[in-house]
Length: 125
Image (cartoon, rainbow, N blue to C red; front, side, top):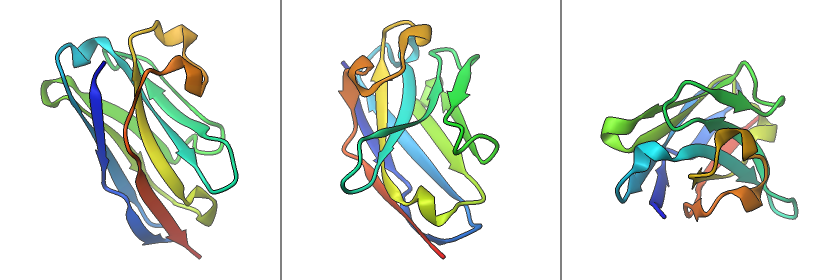
């Protein structure tokens, strides 16, 4: 498993932007699909975005499509989540996740064996 550390969260006004980073330690990071989930108090963790090990495939939750972009730099062991046009409903703790399972099989929280500690994003109206 890889260890994941998120950063880049914070407080931003609606319409603003943030870029989250997820840095992985451990070898073979480039063989992992990496994604983001988010969670607000009292709710289940919600899928946000996913990128394949090589970066050639990605998918997004409908709620963030067109506003968020996931990317990766395997030379830096880092995955990014660029979040634009933020809305108050994007407020949540954001978690980086990773898995060596095939990209096409990754959908739920149970599909990911590596989780970061989370970074908080607050969008004010």
